[in-house]
Length: 144
Image 1 (cartoon, rainbow, N blue to C red):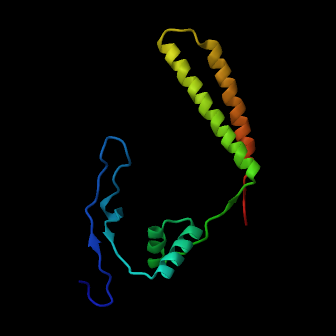
Image 2 (image 1 turned 180 degrees about the vertical axis):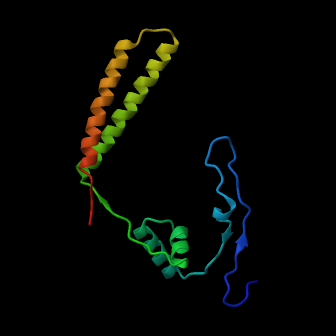
Image 3 (image 1 turned 90 degrees about the vertical axis):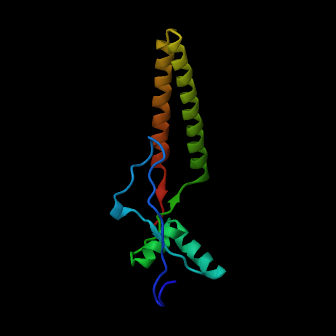
C-alpha cells in the first residue's frame, strides 16, 4: 500500500513484438510500464470521457497529459457536407474495384496471358479516381 498522498503504481513488464513484423520496441526510458488507478464517480467518469473526446485523445492519454501538466488543446473538427461523404464513399468503392481488377490482371500475368491493354485501362481508371479524390479532399474544411 502506498503512503498517504502518494500514488500507488503497478509495474508491468515491457513487451516485445510477437512476430517479425510490427513496431520495434521503444528504448527502456521511453516505455510506459507503470500504471495508476483512480476511483471516480459516474459523473466524473462521464466528464472525463467527454473531455478526452473533445481533445481527440483516449481517456488514458488525456489523464496522463493532465496529470503531467501538459496543455491540452481541443481537437480540430473536420466539417463536411453529406454529399461530400457520399462522394468519398463512392471513390472508396471505385478504388476497391480497381484493386480487384488489378489483382485479376496479376493472376493473368502469372498464367502467361498478354495484359498490356487491360493494364493501360486500369492506369486510366486510377488517374481518374485520383483526380476525383483530390477534388473531394479540397472540399474538406476545418471548422474554426
